[in-house]
Length: 446
Image (cartoon, rainbow, N blue to C red; front, side, top):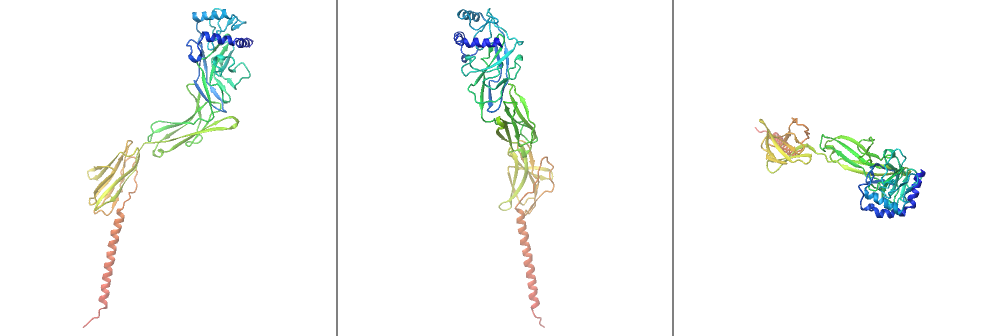
């Protein structure tokens, strides 16, 4: 700890000298990163936190020892000649290389020292608020200190190169980029090529609804509602209008972040077409409050024709028009008409309508077809002379066929004709009775 304090003091006292040597020997970070740096981290490039909630920053670092080039050694010698006490550590006689991204110390021969996981390892987070070169003024967290600018805690095991960090309560931040720095004995380096950009939002994330599988009747699909989970310690609560109290699962993504999901398997039918799935994500935040966001998806399920039926219209004279109707998604593409004969069904036409002479007896039906399948209507029987029709009592055994009573206007015509006949009979009977009464009133003569 004393050695660390001396290093920090030396860096503070020589900050102006460091800036001079950086401007002479190294390009600014913004112009590009050296591929020859010896510290890098694996972490998401960007992270977004929710105000009032925590934020997990998954992180691991990789130390790649390398030999210094002749050019670097020459620059190091010039630095020592210009400022012999620059970056000096009186404990082991080593000197800092002054590079913000590769400032682990060199020994007096100009060789870079290597990371030793047996030593105490300190994790440091710095920002670009004043430029990454402004270390140590831009330090927001140091694992060796009890108090820091941000409520941050490195929860990973640094000796195992795990620098995962938890921001316990995200509030608006001035800096946008954060850099990880590792210090272990004489080895000190900042991963200037791997900044993590953090932004804070006030509103909750809308959940995402996904459906796996083909949206067609009789198919089984999996419906998933998911929401980003930047704070695994307080995951969002997911609810929807499918299964009540669904089992919530939290999984790790490839970049180390987390996502909370709920799932349900559904076997599709025509009743699901147009169904609206609603999902809500409720995020807990500070002081027992919550932030909520919703999303919904309307299902479009393909299904074969349903409720296929035939209706009859009597037009001019004795011409009859048959109309085939059906419900399907996608809509019916072809209507085919058949007449039932002694030799079996015979195709007689195509189209939504079919016309024929009403003096012809026969049994007819239609078949509705779309991309998913087909369905036949019940047979309809025409009687000659056509004053009525009767649907068949025999229902064709076709898979998925639904039969409904066929409505028609011919029954009203038949009733009218029967009524006319009855009136004629009544009038005829009345005339006969009247004639008989007249004959009875005529006197008899000898």
